[in-house]
Image 1 (cartoon, rainbow, N blue to C red):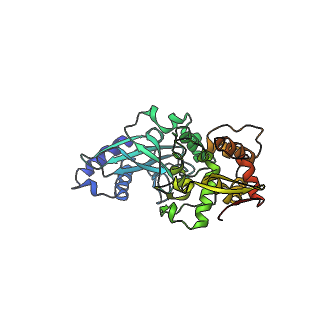
Image 2: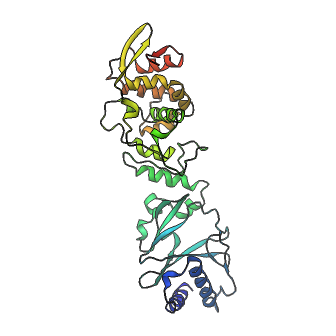
Image 3: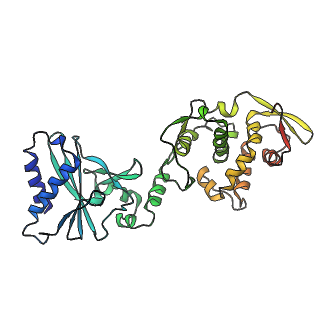
Amino acid sequence: MLRHTKSSVLDQLSGVETPSKLSGNEFELIVYENSVINAKSTPFEGLLRHTEDREFPDIIAADLFGVEVKATKKDDWTSIGNSVLESSRVKTVDKIYMFFGKLGGTPDIKYRNYEDCLKGIAVTHYPRYQIDMLLNESDSIFKKMGVEYDAIRTSRNPVKAIREYYRSQMREGDALWWIDDDLDKTATVSPIIRNLSGLDAATRDQVKADLFVKFPEIFSTSRTKYENIPAYLAARYGVVTANLRDHFTASGQVEVSFSDKVFRAPRIIGELVKLAELISAVLGDESPQSLSNAWRKHVASSLDTAEKAWAYELDRNTAHMELPVRASILYGAALEGEVKIEGR
């Protein structure tokens, strides 16, 4: 039936002056009407249904098979498809085919098994499949992940498996900015991109405390210590900055009063003391496992709390500083109000 529908739809498109001006809904209706005609004298005669706008797929045959109709006004075979959740999928449909119209250039049509032409994941307001009608079957997103399409679509949390695959492909400085388990489930990112310098002081301090926890290498001498932060800032907070280093190391050094001693320390230690309570609050929402994910490294089992794990990383990354005590001790003392930064 799909083969005959392809021929009849192409015949109809040949009579349209400018096929690329057809809307997606108009093309979908053309496909449905021709499918009804071509279903005559087949087991599907009288059993085709054009679904509602928010149902998936677009055409149902005998409540068992489905056809998802897509079109592009461009002269290529790619498009953005449906949500990976498939929450609007008609439950009785077992098998789906993709019927794709290329309306730009010389109009043409291809149809394939739905899952065989899903190349990857794109993100609009939610993760959606990328369609490529020329895709080799071995290059589908499911082949890359090593899982079956049906296993993903029937999973209680399909995004989780997809997210883990993309996380495994991440390079230094990359971040998943969509639906990440490591982010607060109640958090939302504003559609407005903000500059870190433009945030109010309280919000900026909260962001900096989070960065201290998620990126303890900020305290180190590494030349690449800031490289992973911009992607996280954009993903987590919708925030950018052109002078990230200045927020932590500008103004050189500070004077620290602790245990009847006054000593000079890098300004970032002053920030550590100032933000100690906010850092503690961030750590209260973390676990060694979540920090392991954030740091992309194994956390020793002996570090059985987020605070212990972070304190270890803090001391490791500040070992080069000439401090009279470990940085983690200053952090703990700051929580007790036993440290003072001169001039504050």
